[in-house]
Length: 249
View 1: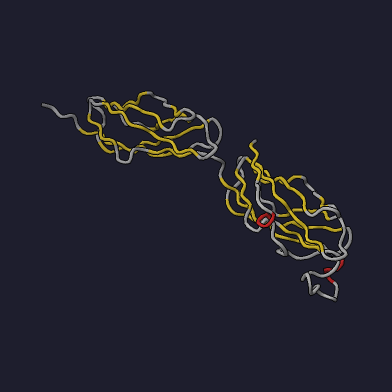
View 2: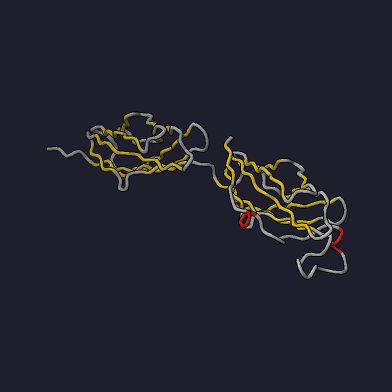
């Protein structure tokens, strides 16, 4: 499992007063402190101001902070609800101690975690008084992967002819695997060399040779090309070529 640690400054890492306050003073009649804008004996939770990003199959460390008003010096236990499917949070019931200003959490996404933008709730439960609540935004991105690139124009191949073409690969930053390729439903009379090409780790392309027999099927073809990595999801593309009639003298 890969580890991804997010290094941000305190100013950008957490935002202030984004949720509802908690603590004994949260329902007090005296309202907010005119200096701090926060009622005495209350607290607010703070989370990253922008959506935190997490890739499938990875972990990311994030910070949940606490803003304490005058007289509030309790421990606060955090609980989570509506966490996206496939995402886990550790520790399960973290505590921001009375002497601390924040707590570190580790978010983990499984390989099959749905991708997209999500929100879940963090509740801060003090020893006494009302709970505080805040919304945490999370983006789950696909795990580092690849795409295959085909020739820009369809390859033209005469019956009885062979041509060599290049199949390229565009790798995400962390993707460094071999990719095996399979070509489905090749037309009658057209063969491929090598029959099971592989783009090796570190390579940007591989060359394949198409050979059309003298009686190969004529026409325009779009063959499904499947790229299979050692780990992760397969990627498919279309390899297009045209077989034309052999010129006879």
